Image: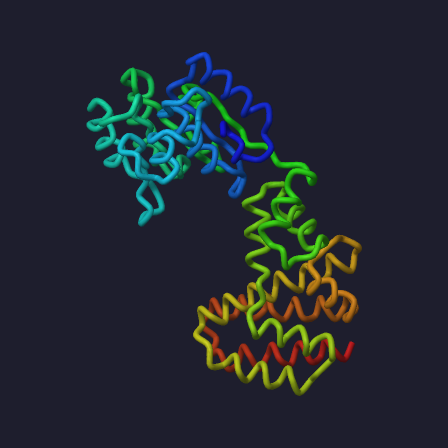
Amino acid sequence: MGFDLLLGNGALKSRLGAALAQEKTGHCYLLAGPAGSGKTTLARLLAAALQCEGREKPCGICGSCRKAMAGIHPDIITVDTPDRKTVPVERIRALQADAYIRPNEGRRKVYLFPRAQALTESAQNALLKLIEEPPPYGVFLLLSDNPERLLPTVRSRCQLLRLEPLSQAEALPWLAERFPQRDREALLAAYRRGGGYLGAAAAVLEGELLAPETETLLQCLTRRDMLGLTALGASLERKTREELLALLQAWKALLARALMARSGLPESREAAGLGRALAAPALMRCLQGVDTCLEAADSNVGLGHLCGYLTAEMQDALAL
């Protein structure tokens, strides 16, 4: 098994494999990369490897690996406060007390910090004291999409594991298997928009699953159906403000991708079709109308006024 579950990043995986084989692992790692780059997958694999009882680490077969991959190993502890924007110093003080209690059953105690950049300055300073003089069995895995927000003193105590983007050859087969209903152009567009990172590309494709109202919008715009736009606008007035905002954000992204498709960039089938149906000025007029509605919605303008304005703007765009 090894680190095969993490695609790409060959040099990083070789480095970790060699360190594990020679039992020369560090006690503090900083896993850095943007959202969707594979930090969580790497952290899970590394935590399993540090507890692994097999020859190739992680073997994926032994009891320790199975517990680690299932998230139920008693000596792999997640350090976070998901209900808060930051991780306060009190959470680290609790960790300090726990860190000097020997492992329950594993070789090590592994602490995962899924939002290391969310540690307050006082929490980072408290953590610094621990990672400067850790217990011999303690390992700390700090995950961050913005490692520059960590104190230089904390970063200097960590071995940096920076996740790299994947090549098209590595990413597209995985995306095609995960999203078999999407054509190659949509997969390629998502890959590029995700910066070469699988998680980010998958998030793009999942966000492109069209709501019924978006399907209707596409039909109205491509067929230049003025009456259909009027009916669609009237139906939106029954939505909550939150539902309408989410829909408008999706429409904004779709219209922006249609403009990109007109410039020759690969895009999803829906965006490319809309780009062929409407000229750039019409797409821009629709996009500006959506933007105006999003700004007005933040000022508590009534939903009826928003929907009426947007309907008129889109109908005017079709007349261009």
